Length: 637
Image (tube, rainbow, N blue to C red; front, top):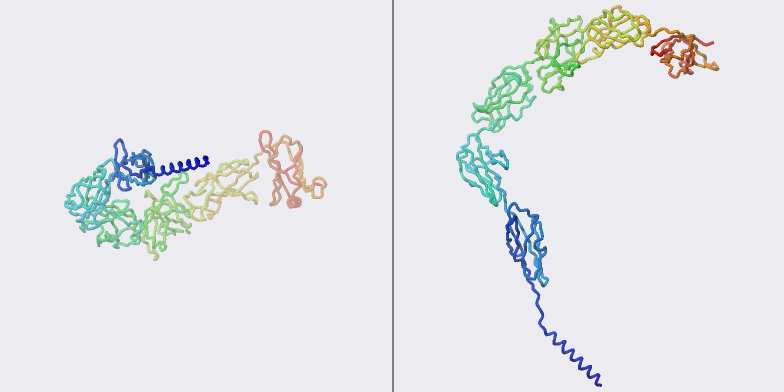
């Protein structure tokens, strides 16, 4: 009973204590989260930012590197800031800072850090008391180390002593003298532009009211082709003098001093075009135009061609020297077949109607395959020709030929003596048949070199223009019914050589055909004796026999036997011949006293067995001398 009462009293006491503790006052947490200071130090100098509402703003020097700044930040007591004070940040963009109060409430600040503007440029420049668009400007000597110069171009003879400017400069910059000021620009004027950060730049303004340097804007080399005497041509320029009489145009040979004053027929100032009349008479040539619009302001055009006047044959163009690879003056031309080019100014539009000739002693010889040529040098007016065919009756060679041009009505419209670029007469060589006078040797060993002497052996040329002219001369050597043609080497007009290598012994008739084959071969009776080049040896051919196709041991073989051993000799060549069939035996079979073919192919066997057959074996001794042993093949019994 006592124990239960005690337990009840203790429980009531504990409940009473718990109720007393609920009445104790609690501590309130801070909700302050203000940013009170935001300071940045640049090159030892501190800059305090303005903090307003939730924004932080500061303007730093123009030279500041915004990518690496560490601000010093102060905030409310018991608050925290993220990112922390002193942490490096990139302020080229907005940076957010979060301040957290003791009671965990937050406030976000946005930091916008900029730099002062250092720009101090003149961005545009014009004059308000000139027609809109009448002035323009360009910069000269634009160099950070020098004073920039602005050159304003204004209309010719404008009053530049009282011009009112309209100038724009960089944002937040100022200019002195100010835009809108009326000044005297007859002398250069200096302007000073001050940037927001206080830095300055000086500019020199020069105003030019003269006519700009004149130039042609549309002349081409072929722009005036087919223009006739007295025709009017229109010249496009960039500027003309407002004083009509000051605009003067002259025509001059591009390579010469002769000048023609041209009559001005019209001036269009809106388009800057001036029209002039060509001379009453002019020869086709390459010209230039000279335009003067005021003293010390003139222009010379590029060269162009006038081809609507009189035809102007100048000369025969230079030719390529095959030995040096250089172009040299043409001294001679070969009739027939040689190709050449003439420098001649004529109307291209009428080219197909023209006919071209060489003339001598009143006779005209038509030039062949004429065509305009501009592949060698586009600045030359060239026509390509092939020399005339050989006339009948013949004409003599000489340097007294003329170049003649005729129109569609066969009227002579141009020409001159035939000269080269050095104005020297050109020698026309009229080809003739070759004449053989002698040989360097009339009796030679096989393999020797022979020189042929005579006239018209070979004709030099620059270019082959037709099939009547070939690259080489040949010698024809006739022995019995057999002929051999050999190309001559080391040729000139009076000589050429050839080798007798491989020629059989005998007496040959010698005839030469020069590089104009249509002239035929030489007619002189000239003979050449060719002797064997081998030295006699004691080895002889005993027999040469062909065995029939039924022979049990040597079917379809030719066996050649010698009177003594050939072991000390090499065999250079083993050849069998009959009619038009020849057979060089490569896989021969040799022994101490002979040599034989392998089994002959059936077609060759039939020829050799049924027709007269000859052959030879060339033996080479220890001194490397060759010995040719010939034989006649008989049928084996």
